[in-house]
Each structure stands twice: as C-alpha cells, then as structure tokens.
Image 1 (cartoon, rainbow, N blue to C red):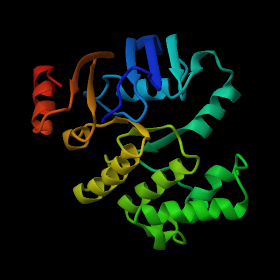
Image 2: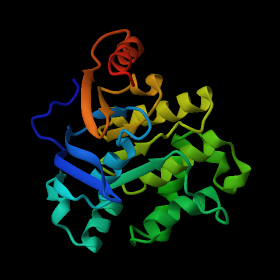
Image 3: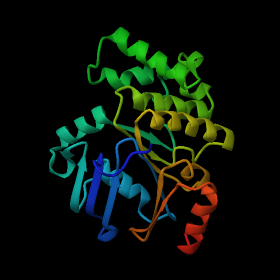
Length: 247
C-alpha cells in the first residue's frame, strides 16, 4: 500500500520566490508523504527547479513556510539548515558533481567523511556495498572520466545514499542519459522508493514521471494540475494533462 498524506514528511505552504524583482514562485503549496514518489513537470521557466531548490533549503524563500521531517526549515540558521541537508536529504542532479581527481569510491566516501560518520573502514564498506547494489561494484577505482554517463549517475546516487536520507531530490536525473541508462537509473531509484525513501523528481520525461505515485504540473510559477497515477496507461494520462495545460 502506498503512503497517505496523513503524516506528511515535507510540507511547503504559500512559498514565494523572486529573482531580480521577478516573482518565480507564486504562493506554491506542496506536500510529500513518507515514502511517496512525486514527479514535478512543466515547461522551462515554470519554476520547477526553483521549487525543488527552495523546499530543499538550497535557496532561501521570500515568504512561506517549509517543514521537513518535523523541522521548520525557514527558521533555521544557515549552519543548521546545511546540517539537515547533509544528514537527512540526498540530491541527484542532471550532471553529477563528482570530483574528477578522485575515484568513484573516494567521491562517495568523502560525502560521509566530512561529517565524521562511522570509522574510515565503515565508510568504505558502505560505499562499496552501495556501488555493488547500483550494479557498478567493479568500477569504484575508476575516475569519473573513465565511466559512462549512466554509470556516473548511479555513482552520484550512491553518494547521495551514504547517510540514508529520508528523501532524495532529483533535478532531471535522467536528462543527460540515453533511454537504456535512464531506465537503469530509474530502476535503482524505484528500488529505493519501494524501501521507503521518498522521492521528489523534476523531469521533462513522461516515462520517468509515469513511475511516480503522483505528478504535479507547474505553469507560470504555480501548480496548475495534479495527477494521481493509479491507472494503467500512465504515460497517456500524463501527456493528456500536459496537452490540456499547453505544457
């Protein structure tokens, strides 16, 4: 049974955000339940990435409230907010930001080493376990330039999982991948979601969004529609909504 909204993990209320005097988010409300997979779709400039960055605490908001895992993020000092991101959130972007002079394994270990999680041996063991689970266990000694885009993205997911986050934020995590690599990345994210990790993913791809429990459509800085994916022809339902909204 999929999660309900009774006890939301993430609640964004009346969120406003402007850049250079132009309002990008116009009082957006969004809720994500524990273990829920929510996809956010919309045209370029609709505010998708701004919404994700705002509710994840990567950007400050002009107005509104954001509560995550029982913590009011909008009232936290910068250091405390960074600690929440580091310990309870994971991030996967379109271009993995791994350090090119470190191996995949060292990139992943470094994430938790900065916060002093476990012993050095514990961190290496967990990183190796995550690499194996992601299907790239034999590539830990390679550098980012020595692996494919799909393999690099899976390594980025491993890095995001080192601290066992409550939620993973993804901003076009398959946008730079071919269809096969995208399917592999989404299969991995789907496994994590099935085990209880919430996902909030911005995407332009209806095939990616069709894996979600719910799709939120943004237009002009507002949530214009929402589709609960409980049918069979999910891609068709998403495309219909996009056509109706002229997205």
